[in-house]
Length: 165
Image (cartoon, rainbow, N blue to C red):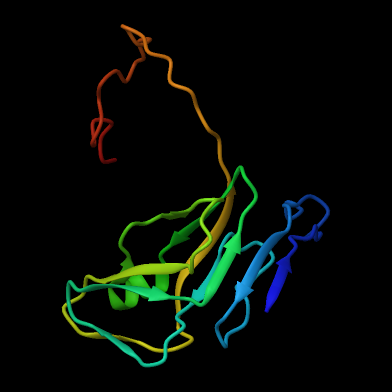
């Protein structure tokens, strides 16, 4: 089935509104509902595993889990695949290339690279919520080669140079 997903403007209260985006075409070849926002203020939509049989992930193993979803994003929009915090905190399972980027010209099935960072086996079941999908605008840039960069107070400090507290 082909669905068009429209992001509608909904009022949360007098001072906050959900932003309006363009429609996104989606093909759902899974037996699961379309990704949706669990609350009015959610940034991400849960992606579900589309499996014919369970996958067992041993400690430090990784696999690509298919979702059965195919999308057509407008140019200037990307989809980001991010970990689910509960899955990471409770089970030690996360998205390996977080955030994974789905470009506007990609037409293949959405897959999620999961890794088990725990010391115990983890079983992925059909329909399990495995990641979040964030829809975001992005910019493109042209490089301007120069010989010197402007100075800042931070300078070359990085990797913890501003302190831990």
